[in-house]
Image 1 (tube, rainbow, N blue to C red):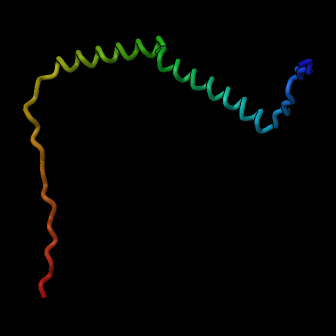
Image 2 (tube, helix red, strand yellow):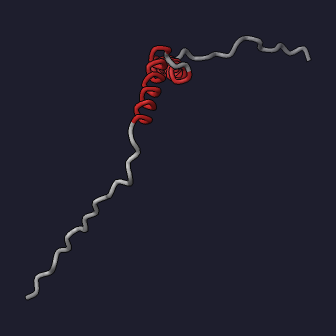
Image 3 (cartoon, rainbow, N blue to C red):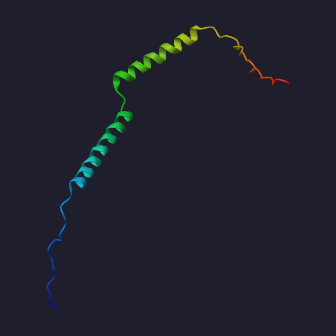
Length: 86
């Protein structure tokens, strides 16, 4: 029972260049995704204000226009090719 326990850390090989490249590439990809998600969630104040003014202007012009009746749709039947009789 007095056997000695091996408490030394296990031997771990050093990561290769490809493993390091993959690790840092994954970190950069995760950071890029977070930036994209934040850009969608947090709108810029300048662009948001412009959209509001454009939408209010669009509503005002729609109210000024007179309502038109239904627009007639022009339907053209495709010409059928007749077979030549011999």
